[in-house]
Length: 116
Image 1 (cartoon, rainbow, N blue to C red):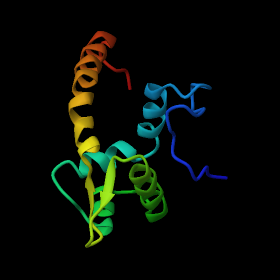
Image 2 (cartoon, rainbow, N blue to C red):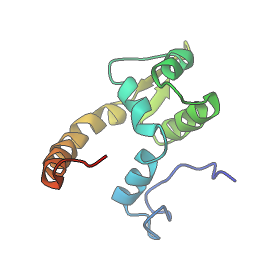
Image 3 (spheres, rainbow, N blue to C red):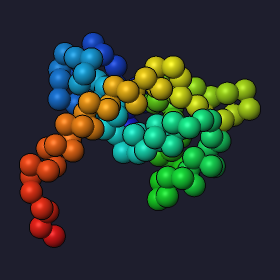
């Protein structure tokens, strides 16, 4: 059974019974396809079909569930024409993630070559 409410600070979320803001954000962003949807919206609004086409392999039910969660969380908004776009807060996420991306690159290099 799916919880119909997206993670929110102050409520229990994955990894935090107190709902620390960082943990709530990590829970939301760690959901399947959430970051990919936000990534695809970085350059402008997209309709649901165009967004799904860019996220190859994502089912329409997952797409609409994530869009609902991201909209309720204030990161995505739906325009009058039905297209989805990042809100100001959603757009700010990119600059917030840059330091984490830099850290992850350093971390990956420290792990050495992958054995596969």
